[in-house]
Length: 298
Image 1 (cartoon, rainbow, N blue to C red):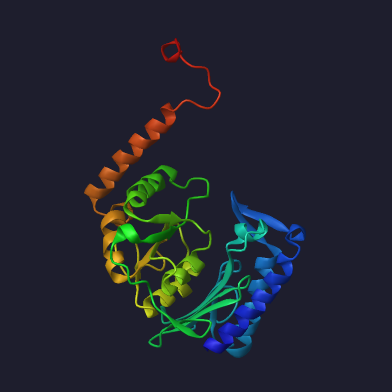
Image 2 (tube, helix red, strand yellow):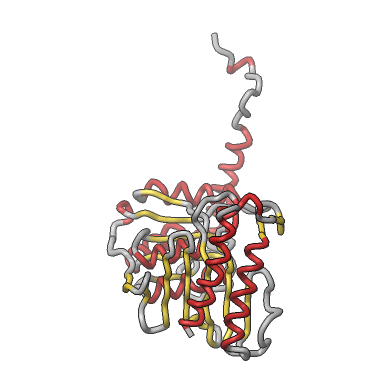
């Protein structure tokens, strides 16, 4: 099954690479504010679905753009597909995006492929058989001190996302680490944790197709993945945390209070801190605004 998924991912990658040569001509539409879809997302998804169902016509499909309309509706085998993770990067010509394909069997991910077409990097994993990058075994990083770690994340970008809560999360994480990065493609972020390029990853407001393949890559590379509270049953909970085991526990200790599954006391303290930050932001003078007399220079 993994070979068919690789074939599908490479076929989609070929479509993406051709389009990247003239990205200005790609038709772009907007699903909602700052959430884009292109004709390349759709063409990539179509070739993936055709390849997978050509080999396994009895399997189900759960894809970002077309949902569950293709494939068998009652199969225990479901392919979870993000045809172009990092669409905003792609339409700006920033080469940080990928194809993500996972196979869930009775709700558990057993096969995973993440393909970065701009670098021709192929990440694969099969349950119980390890994770690989370009056919070489990969493992999560071995660092155990958070202050030495490089952590990746994603930022809120949709209308209604809780920006102030995210700013508090970053404020808690950034002073405790060697750095925080925001590449812009969650599936690739997880692949990089699996390969040991980064030490951990966290993000909220994610969908199953963002994390399905990457989660298996991380666990098969010796890491842990779950929600911000550390619960491993996270796939449809719209939040994700991944790292090597020692760093994972430290991140849960810092970020767990921001989980929607946190205790009442933690949620209350976060609400108070976020309200304080929002008030401070509201009181901050806007650039070019006239000063009050009390603030005038004498």
